[in-house]
Length: 132
Image (cartoon, rainbow, N blue to C red; front, top):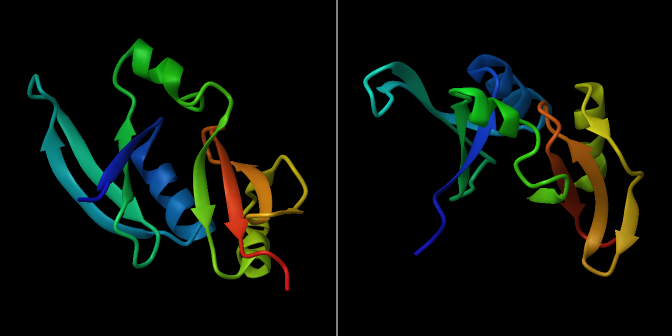
Protein backbone atom coordinates (compact mmCIF):
# COMPACT_ATOMS: atom_id res chain seq x y z
CA UNK A 1 0.00 0.00 0.00
CA UNK A 2 1.16 3.53 -0.72
CA UNK A 3 -0.24 7.02 -1.08
CA UNK A 4 -0.63 7.59 -4.81
CA UNK A 5 -1.83 11.19 -5.19
CA UNK A 6 -2.54 14.28 -3.13
CA UNK A 7 -4.79 16.94 -4.68
CA UNK A 8 -3.47 20.48 -4.90
CA UNK A 9 -6.10 23.02 -5.99
CA UNK A 10 -4.64 25.55 -8.44
CA UNK A 11 -5.90 28.53 -10.45
CA UNK A 12 -4.54 27.36 -13.79
CA UNK A 13 -3.24 24.04 -15.10
CA UNK A 14 -0.48 25.34 -17.35
CA UNK A 15 1.11 27.77 -14.89
CA UNK A 16 1.03 25.05 -12.20
CA UNK A 17 2.65 22.54 -14.57
CA UNK A 18 5.37 25.08 -15.41
CA UNK A 19 6.03 25.83 -11.74
CA UNK A 20 6.32 22.21 -10.66
CA UNK A 21 8.31 20.98 -13.66
CA UNK A 22 10.62 23.96 -14.19
CA UNK A 23 11.11 25.45 -10.73
CA UNK A 24 10.89 22.28 -8.65
CA UNK A 25 12.10 19.71 -11.20
CA UNK A 26 9.03 17.45 -11.06
CA UNK A 27 7.99 15.32 -14.02
CA UNK A 28 4.65 15.72 -15.77
CA UNK A 29 3.40 12.12 -15.68
CA UNK A 30 -0.13 12.68 -16.97
CA UNK A 31 -2.14 15.41 -18.66
CA UNK A 32 -5.34 13.93 -20.03
CA UNK A 33 -8.76 15.32 -20.91
CA UNK A 34 -11.40 14.40 -18.36
CA UNK A 35 -14.88 15.38 -17.22
CA UNK A 36 -16.29 16.71 -13.98
CA UNK A 37 -18.98 14.69 -12.20
CA UNK A 38 -21.61 16.78 -13.99
CA UNK A 39 -20.01 16.38 -17.45
CA UNK A 40 -17.98 19.59 -17.86
CA UNK A 41 -14.50 19.42 -19.37
CA UNK A 42 -11.43 19.39 -17.16
CA UNK A 43 -7.94 17.87 -17.22
CA UNK A 44 -6.36 15.10 -15.17
CA UNK A 45 -2.89 16.52 -14.46
CA UNK A 46 -0.32 14.65 -12.37
CA UNK A 47 3.22 15.73 -11.49
CA UNK A 48 5.72 13.73 -9.46
CA UNK A 49 9.28 14.21 -8.27
CA UNK A 50 11.59 12.04 -10.43
CA UNK A 51 11.32 8.40 -9.33
CA UNK A 52 8.62 9.12 -6.74
CA UNK A 53 5.58 6.94 -6.15
CA UNK A 54 3.44 9.71 -4.67
CA UNK A 55 2.43 12.60 -6.89
CA UNK A 56 0.31 15.71 -6.96
CA UNK A 57 -2.98 15.89 -8.80
CA UNK A 58 -3.17 19.49 -9.97
CA UNK A 59 -6.87 20.29 -9.90
CA UNK A 60 -8.11 23.60 -11.30
CA UNK A 61 -10.42 25.34 -8.84
CA UNK A 62 -14.08 24.91 -9.74
CA UNK A 63 -16.39 27.37 -8.02
CA UNK A 64 -16.05 29.89 -5.21
CA UNK A 65 -15.30 27.42 -2.43
CA UNK A 66 -12.42 25.79 -4.28
CA UNK A 67 -11.10 29.14 -5.51
CA UNK A 68 -11.00 30.33 -1.89
CA UNK A 69 -8.84 27.30 -0.98
CA UNK A 70 -6.12 28.06 -3.55
CA UNK A 71 -2.95 28.90 -1.64
CA UNK A 72 -4.43 28.11 1.76
CA UNK A 73 -5.07 24.40 1.70
CA UNK A 74 -3.23 23.82 4.97
CA UNK A 75 -4.37 26.88 6.89
CA UNK A 76 -1.05 28.71 6.59
CA UNK A 77 1.06 25.84 7.95
CA UNK A 78 3.76 24.01 6.06
CA UNK A 79 1.76 21.23 4.48
CA UNK A 80 4.13 19.80 1.89
CA UNK A 81 7.67 18.49 2.32
CA UNK A 82 10.07 18.13 -0.59
CA UNK A 83 13.10 15.98 0.32
CA UNK A 84 16.12 16.41 -1.98
CA UNK A 85 19.57 14.83 -2.10
CA UNK A 86 21.41 18.06 -2.95
CA UNK A 87 19.92 20.92 -0.94
CA UNK A 88 22.25 23.62 -2.27
CA UNK A 89 21.65 22.77 -5.94
CA UNK A 90 17.87 22.50 -5.47
CA UNK A 91 17.73 25.75 -3.50
CA UNK A 92 19.77 27.56 -6.17
CA UNK A 93 17.63 26.20 -9.05
CA UNK A 94 14.45 27.25 -7.26
CA UNK A 95 15.80 30.74 -6.60
CA UNK A 96 16.78 31.09 -10.29
CA UNK A 97 13.15 30.30 -11.16
CA UNK A 98 11.83 32.94 -8.79
CA UNK A 99 10.59 30.66 -6.02
CA UNK A 100 9.96 32.75 -2.91
CA UNK A 101 11.70 31.47 0.22
CA UNK A 102 10.19 32.78 3.44
CA UNK A 103 12.98 31.49 5.68
CA UNK A 104 16.72 31.27 5.27
CA UNK A 105 18.19 27.75 5.12
CA UNK A 106 18.88 26.38 8.58
CA UNK A 107 20.16 23.15 10.08
CA UNK A 108 17.85 20.95 12.13
CA UNK A 109 18.46 17.46 13.56
CA UNK A 110 16.50 16.00 10.62
CA UNK A 111 18.43 17.95 7.97
CA UNK A 112 18.84 21.26 6.19
CA UNK A 113 15.53 23.09 5.73
CA UNK A 114 14.07 26.26 4.21
CA UNK A 115 10.40 27.17 3.85
CA UNK A 116 9.17 28.27 0.43
CA UNK A 117 5.88 29.17 -1.20
CA UNK A 118 4.46 27.44 -4.24
CA UNK A 119 2.90 29.50 -7.04
CA UNK A 120 -0.38 29.80 -5.10
CA UNK A 121 1.18 30.60 -1.71
CA UNK A 122 1.05 27.19 -0.02
CA UNK A 123 3.96 26.68 2.37
CA UNK A 124 6.48 23.89 1.69
CA UNK A 125 9.65 22.68 3.40
CA UNK A 126 12.65 22.07 1.18
CA UNK A 127 14.52 19.36 3.07
CA UNK A 128 18.05 18.11 2.51
CA UNK A 129 20.44 15.88 4.39
CA UNK A 130 22.15 17.26 7.48
CA UNK A 131 25.44 19.00 6.66
CA UNK A 132 28.50 16.81 6.98
